[in-house]
Image (cartoon, rainbow, N blue to C red; front, side, top):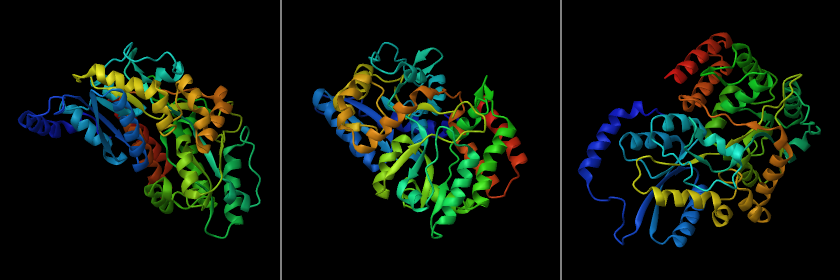
Length: 422
């Protein structure tokens, strides 16, 4: 994701175009108020979102919501350019990683007291705060968990692990056994370089990813994390680095679990439905393994994303009404379900609980079973939006043999701390 500074030149050009463009001032030809709403996702998410927009417009016939949809890779680049050019959408979708950057630059409206949050999970709601103000409302929550493709797993003859006590060594050895028991085309697991995964791994060792404005993960922990990938590759518990890079680039539908070529893999809970659909297989969710002697799995409830409102909008009342609808109206929840995470409004969740499809029911059951073990999600500081890319690049360099773990850990910490420092 580009920072707002990096789009200054593009912004200047956009400002010129905006100034010369004239025309629309936030209304439509038939007198309705036009509300611009930006979000990203798949075709399936776009269809669901359009249904929710239609339901809102039916209840609010004077408001016309115009969705500004894009795929994930281009979303933040486009949004940063619009914000820098004072052409921000009225309602914007943000990840928790981008909250501090956008709020810190004055791009977001303070929603304190502007949207009804009485029935929302207050612990999760706190993740939308920055400098003591509520700039964002969580759309829903996910947990990062181990997924098991039951048919592939069962075919190996191995037993499911006790996920309350299994360790990383157990996971690596189990992955190796499953691969060896296969026909040469299936693997025990697929891995990911998700920054949240590293955060959870660090938490098991008593470390925070962010600590007092710096990266709190030690070089030893980073290298231990990379050593797990190295072991999976060496034992053939997973594909090699080149193959994993290819799989990761192909997306969730082409994952090993999704194509029934892998027994295990780590994913966000709201991806269960897609994986179950494309694989046609029974999937199960487990806690992540933990370090030997660790007291926690390091898991936490993570907002899937946040609803925010531009500080520059001239349609704040309508924008607030739309966000309120998305988080508090049972009809909206009944349409969107867990696509943007499990709803955090207890009343609307109860109203649609029995209508949830099997995958969502499974996610809810799992989340409820581990809820007492879950920590509160941390709001990353400015620069946090860059961490996913930094973690991935150095991890790929290590697993592919381009850099030694020692060199990569040093450079990783230098670049990550520089990103936070701005």
